[in-house]
Image (cartoon, rainbow, N blue to C red; front, side, top):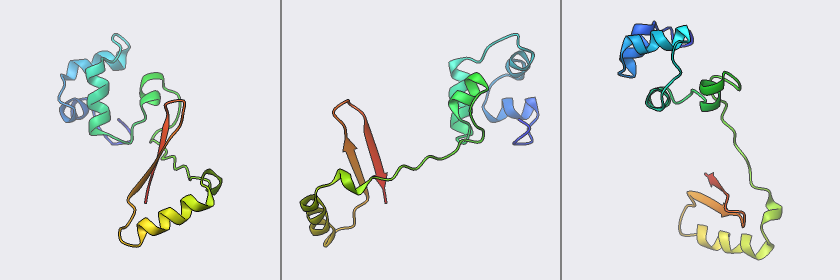
Length: 107
């Protein structure tokens, strides 16, 4: 609240919850509900979820940008990408890993 210069009333109004809910959270009487957490994250996207729930981590949220390493591609793959990009601009590349995770790279 201090980061945004908000009073408890102003925060409650901005995320459309009752002022008493904020009061109960600040006093430690109640823990935040899922509805509260989702409303905060929607209204204030720079709030980091882990920080909000545990008080640990960073606030405001630090953007992490990971770069693909050229060793992920074989030389003929890069040539194929160049052929595609002659007619169109590449907007996003997504790499899917066998463990079910993926990384997305946006230009």
